[in-house]
Image (cartoon, rainbow, N blue to C red; front, side, top):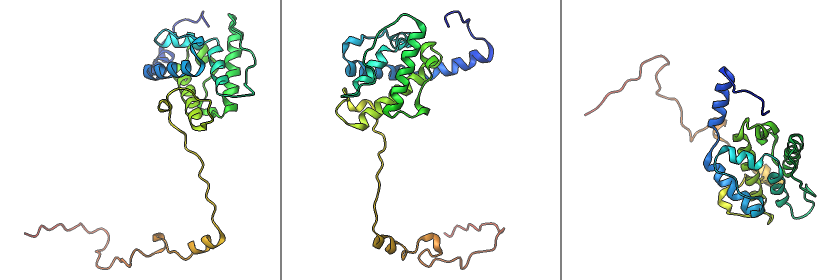
Amino acid sequence: MSNRGTPYGLSRELQIKIDRKYDPEVEERLVEWIMAQCGHNVGQPEPGKTGFQNWLKDGCVLSELINSLYTSNKPFKAIKASGMAFKQMEQISLFLSAAEKYGITKTDMFQTVDLFEGKDLASVQRTLMALGNLAVTKDDGTYKGDPGWFHKKAQENKREFTDEQLSEGKSVIGLQMGTNKLASQAGMKGYGLPRQIINDP
């Protein structure tokens, strides 16, 4: 982890591409939300990618965040900070499991090393944005902060039709069924002929 050297060649190019996806504006919004959601006891990170990583790296702030989105049956009964790397990584993994139970899809999840080793902090941002979107969408009173910070997710809009309505739909002739207000191809030229464009004065 800390004894890894600087990547070279293709590895370095890939890391540069990943690093470019990190958005300082998203970082600012997420910090603002997490502090509004959890209170000022979580502290405030130094501005920039490294400060953001160090703030979240031990998993405690993340655990506080997911706990704040529940009114009861909180995922973490006690959150203890630890200086040991394996304990911090375990705390991050527990947060990811809790986030999945909350409703975040696997495709929106970051990997533990993305945060702990700083491999892909843009994916950490994506996960936290997805968490914010879901919290705003649930609208269960646990979300704190400006609702405009996140987009509401699309909700299922299930329709129920009676048998009568379904049978009425069978009598409607769609345009794909062969009629378009009795338009026809009468007067059209054969295939392969050039189109005649004549400007009449």
